[in-house]
Structure formats: C-alpha cells, structure tokens
Length: 530
Image (cartoon, rainbow, N blue to C red):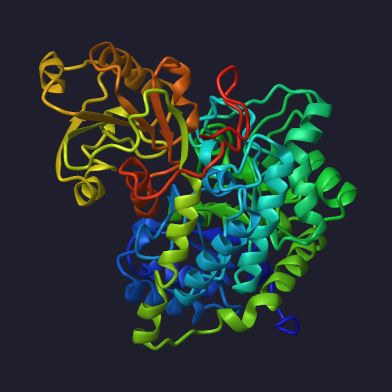
C-alpha cells in the first residue's frame, strides 16, 4: 500500500473522515470518495438497518477509492452503541469497572471487536480514556471507567488488548480529557479550569499510558483548558504537537472529534477549522453530517496547500501515519465478501459472557429495610420518565420505558407508568401508589435539568412510599438529590443484559456483586457496594 503514488488531491482526501445519511452510500458521496480518495467513513445508527444491510454497505465502501477507505463507528459498549441490540453491546465502561475484574474489560473489547469485524468495521472510537472527576459531567459519566486515573488506565488497557485480539483498530478519546467538564461540546465549548498539576494527573496520564503501548489512534476533544492553553484541544499545537507528539513520543494517528459539533461549527469558519486543526497536528478531520460542509473543508485544505499556506510536507507527515495504520489492518479492510449464515451466527454469539459481566456489575448501594429481594408474585408499579436522546432538547423527550419490557418477563403482575419531563407529578399518582406492593422508579439523567425534575418527583413519592426502590439507569450520582432514599441500585446503563441482571437481583435470582468505581462525594466511597 505504501508504494501507491498519490497526487496532492489524493493525499488531501486521506486526511478526512465523512459521515452521511441513509442506509446506502448516496451517489454524490460515493463519487466524492472516489474522485478525492477519501480516507475514512464513519457509520451511525442512522446508517444501520440490519446486519446484512451493513455488510453490503461496508463491502461497497471497501470497494471504492484509490486507497481503501476505512470504516469506523462509535461502539464503546453500554450507552454508546450504534448497532443497538443487533450486535454486542456488553455494558458501559463504568459498569465494567464496577466488576473490579480487569479481565472483563478485555473480554468486552474482544466481543465487541469480533462482532464489529464481522460487520466490516475496521476501527472503533473506543476505549474512553476520560477520567470522570466532575460528577456533573453531562456527556461522559458512565462512559468513563472511573474518577480514578489508575482504574481508567488499567481497564482501558485491557479493553484495548481485547480489540487488538479481534484485529480492529482502537482510538482512545477524548484527548486530553473530557472528564472534568460541566458542558457538552456537542452544544457549546466546555471549559475546564484546573492547574497544570491537576491536569497532568487527572486528564493527561491515561493518554500517556495508552500512547506508551502504541494505541492505534487518539481522538482530540473540543475542550478548552484556559489555564494551560488558549486554544481548544483540537486546535492546540501545545496539546497535540508538544505534549502528545514530542513529550510522549506518540506517532499514531490523531483524529479530531467531529468538527460539526456546535463547539466548533458555531464559533469557527471552515477556513479556521482547517488551518487550526492541521497546524495543531490533527491527522484526520472528522465531519459527520453535512456533505456541502465536508466538501468545503476538503477544498479549503487543498487550496491552502496549493498556495503554500500549509506545507505539503505537513500533509506527508499525516499520510505516513495514516498509511502505517492502514497497512496494519489492510488485510481486514479489503472487500469482505461474507457468508450470510456465518455472519448471523457470529452476532450475539457471546451473549452469555455479556450477561455474566452485567451480572457482576449491578451495584446495590442501599437496602436499609431489606426489601431486596422482592416477592415477584406481588403487584409492582414501574415508574419512569420520558427519555431524551443525548444532545437533544428536553422538548424532544420520547415515551419510552427501559425497564418495562424486561420487567414483565421477571414479574408476575406489573404496571408501567411513564411520567412527563415537565416537573409535575400527577395528583392521581398518590392514590395509585397504594395499590401496589412494590414501587420501582427508574431514573435516567442526561443533564442537570432532567436530574432535578426526576429528583423532585422522587422526593414526593418517598413521602408517600418510604419503601420506594430507586434504580439509577445511568449515572450513579443521582442519589445526591435524594440522599435519604432507603433502597438504591445502580445499573450503569440500560442495555438488555443490564436490565436483565437488574431484575435477577431484584427478584433474588442472583446476589449483587458490583462495587462503585467512582466516589459519590459525602455519600459513598469508591469501592462501596452491599
């Protein structure tokens, strides 16, 4: 592959990752990939209908372009998976760490990697290397292994080893750390005000340790550290060229996070995005949505290099790193014509291992009255709230139950009530609560506003039913808003295997084994679990 001669335009194309809409490659996107030798394609849930459809799509992508485009996706496990239940979800990073068994992380990486490889995926944007030291973090949370750097490092290494055994390229994110923010870069520029010493310990060190073992690639974040650099990380030569390249000696590929996030697109022109990214040391500019915007970025970079505003040797340095990455995984990326029956037997073939990891992760933090396990024959009410997808406005909440469908399989007599995210608790609910032997409330907080709404209702319900069982389906930190609750269980996510494990514990089929991999300040220490 390294012997292939590339024109300037074909070199420039390798420095871009594109996303698109639809279950097939749109004609104009395919033509753009072919004509400009685009290096990378990213798939999201919007591109996925079925396993067989995905294989046809990845085969098609692998068949075009002068140099095979590599296909990436976000399949961290747990909350962030693009294939939903089609392929292995395993559980979230924090859930894996809650098992306190590093081997589970390696197993999870291998299971996910093997199934992604079977679908024609060449690389994953995982593992997450962020240390979640900010409890109010709206975007990382359970995607992080822990708030303790050593736990993040140890579990991330094992996850990487699992991906490597599956022959899928890994990408550590979000450099140099998104774990200390209270804002979401999808929506605005997050700022983290910490000292250099704090930065080195809580943000930088996991990336150093994974760089030492030559992780395939690293993704930058759009986070601003005002006390350290005056530019967001994606645009900072200090973070990428000085710290990562020169100080750490890392020579793998550096991807940007998507430059169509509002932190970037709302604050910088296409010209500034290209110039700042390339000058900082970014190898691949990721643009996931708008074809016209993607084309403009490409044309800007081509123009800058032709005019000498960006030196061609700078492009060549990135090409060398990209070609080394592709050479490492090229045999996997050439067209994978697969036997359909074999493909379908591979997907979810390790579901029992997924379930075992989930079983070991569920963390019982409170059981003051001994209500767990419950009598599954008695009448149960499951309360939840409308759900908001990540980065979506609260007004777009959907009437979805995470507990209900699986709860009905474990409980003999169960009703489900979905409350609106409007801060109001129906007056009739108080009368209804008296009808049930058990009340289970599943909270899932995407941001502080949702957390507050759910907490207000939880407090009112506890006044009527002190035996309320609260299940945190996302971040374990929700209990801060109702610290007096008597029964509190943490699942670290809502995937099928996690909810199954939850109900096994609630009904006494298995005992809880999970321990908190984070501290809930002034309530529970790290490592706690009944």
